[in-house]
Image (cartoon, rainbow, N blue to C red; front, side, top):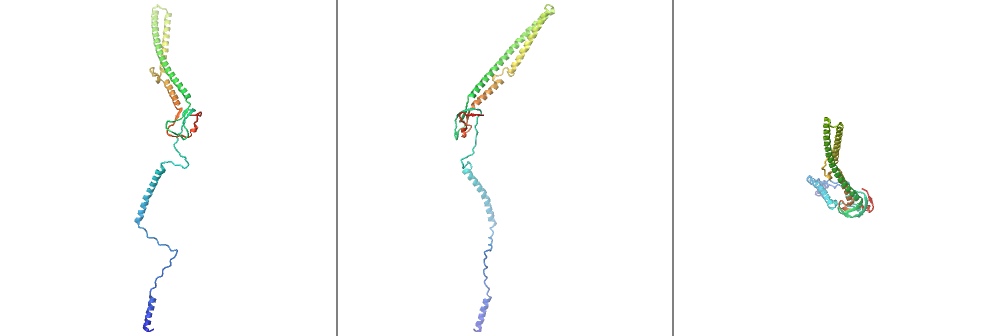
Amino acid sequence: MNAAAKKADDNVTKLEIEAPAKPEAAPVSAAAEPQPAPAAPRKKRRTGRFLLMVALPLALLAGGAYVWVTGGRYQETENANLQQARISIASDTAGRIVQVGIADNQTVKSGDLLFVIDPEPYKIALAQADAAVAAARLNVEQLRAAYSQAMAQQKSAKSEVDYAQSQYDRAADLAQKGINAKSSLDEARNDLDKAKQQLAVAEQGIISAKAALGGNPDIETDKHPSVMSALAARDKAAYNLSQTTVKAPSDGIVYQASSFKVGQYVSV
């Protein structure tokens, strides 16, 4: 190799030596941590939060509306038992049942017949109450007659007093003149005292008769306390009789109707 060629080879060799080495790729490790993703813009984060705040109430509202429309207004059960409003039916009067007009699970309307209690004892009680009212009215008429009689007796007694007073005055005048004996004067005085006593008794009879009429001799018969009491008792007897027929207070379905049987005695 000549000198020029050798020099060229040296230059090539030098170029090869001084050439920069290519960087080797770093070995990838299995445990290397991934690089975090770049943060989303703040505007997108606020928009998502707003949508979440609006969507949650809307979802709750939609769910509630669905429940109300599809089943919220109705009661459901899986074992055929349903709690409903119940009205207990009882009798206000005691007695034996003579008629039953219902059965279990029967639909009834307000006013329909349920059962009937023997009305005969209550009819008798009503008749007795009517008789008591008639007796009270008759008693008032008797009291009014007694008052009239007391007034007549008082008038008669007053006349007797006036007559006895005149007889006494005459006897006293004759005795003063010495024409009549003293015994005649004493007898006239005694007659006058008796007449005054009879007048006092008659006046007391008027007071008693007036008080028996409630202090008003002209009171209406049915306004008298005794008659009003008898009428109240009569109304009570009539009410008890009406309660022997028990009717449905409202529309519904009957259950436990087997508890009422003809011949059974029920208490109030």
